[in-house]
Image (cartoon, rainbow, N blue to C red; front, side):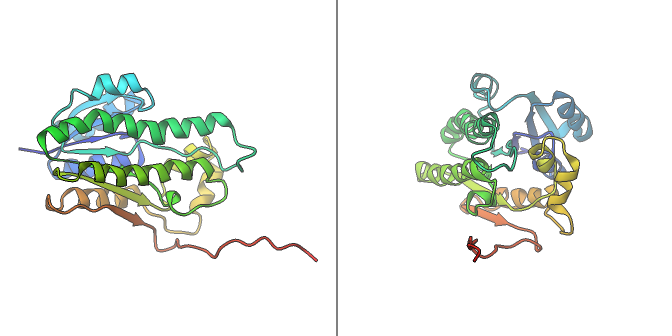
Length: 248
C-alpha cells in the first residue's frame, strides 16, 4: 500500500520539489498551501499521486485543526511552510514582519504537528520532518527573528524526539543553507534585483537538492532516525567572527 506524505507550503520551493520527488516514487500526497490555484496546478501535473489538496494558512490554528486533525493515516508530516521577511537591523524592523515569521515558522509548525502527531502515536509509526535552516545555528546580520524562529524548530525537533522515545515515530530536522527559490523574493517583498544578489556568482542549493535529502531520510529503515541534517552548497561556508575595530 502506498505511503502518504503531508506537505505544508507545497505551492513553491522545497515543498513543490518534495511533492514531485515523492510522487515519482509512488507515494500518495496531501498538499497544503495558501495559494489554491498553485495547488490545483500541481494536482493536475501529478495526477493520481495527489490524494488531496487543502488551501490552508498554517498560521490559522482553528483551520489547521479543522482540516488536519482528522487525518490519522499520515506516514510523513513535512513541516515545510516558512518564510523570512526583511534584513533590517532589529531596531529598524517592521514588527508585523517579526510577528508573521513567528506565526508561520513557529506557530505553524506547532499547530500542524499537534494535529497530526496523535494519529502517528496511536498507530506507533510515522515521521515528522521539520525544515529548519542554518540560520537556526549560525547568526548573520539582519537574521534576528528569522534565526530565532529556526532555532525554535531545532529545539522543538529535539524535544519531540525525547517525548517520542519508546515509540516508532521518528523526528528529523533538515537545515538548508543558501538555496535558490522564492525565499529571497519573499524576504525582499518582490524586489527581484535584491533577491538575485543573494545568489550572484554562487551555485546555490536547489529545491530539488533539498527534496533529495528529505526523500533520503524518509526512506531509511524504520529503526534509523536522522536527528538533524545540515546542508550547504560548496560555495558557502562559515566566516571568521566579526570584530568591530575603532579607528585611530
